[in-house]
Image: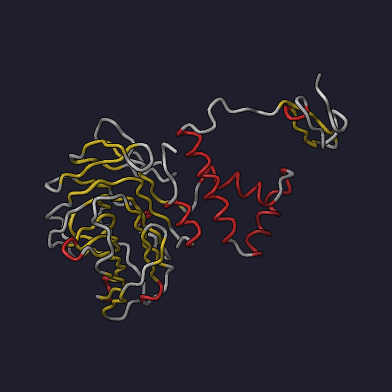
Length: 313
């Protein structure tokens, strides 16, 4: 027989029956209903949804008191708390996520953007492989890459975060732009690797002023044939101090680099590309997974969270 330690319809009910019910207050009344039980709480789709909720919470924690107050006011007509109003909006719009390539496609030439921006791209070559999170893509180092048409959302002018997973041993003497908008005289930004130095490169350009700011570091340990999570952030500032780079969630200690008087990043209409050098004439031999672009500098706490995500679990 089921035993309860407090009344069945009380908020503190426990026991076989009590553990299956949840209580809600709505329109002045208290209602009980059966707790929803996911059929598979660790499926890939549910993990993707759970991670979206986590990203929403990270964004919420960066808001100022005035920003949170604005969401409190917005929630009043719908009888929502400030956070509930914010969360509902975030999950519909994901306002900070400009591009997200999960690289889970098994066929076809379309790279689907799972942000809300619609920045679908095109695979040129590449082969589906097992990735860090479900599937990834193998790039052969000969002519495989991804290209995405220019869009304003891919040129975040007041701050950005670029991130991806890679697995490679390609130590050729080339600078590979693994994520970026940078072509000839239309350079905007890129996050990449210098092969022969096993080094990371992260640069933001102001082409109208013939200037740039950035970070570089050699012997980072990226080209050992293991999966690594690489991230570059820029907070919108005008010196290299505005930039940070991370490997596997750890803040790196790169060398600051700059040229000219940087005022702001330009939006020059360059296409977004993945996995080739900065002038588009050679390509990196690498595996890739989970490429993302944000319009703000993520916190290290969120970057660590991203670096710890895996599927299968």
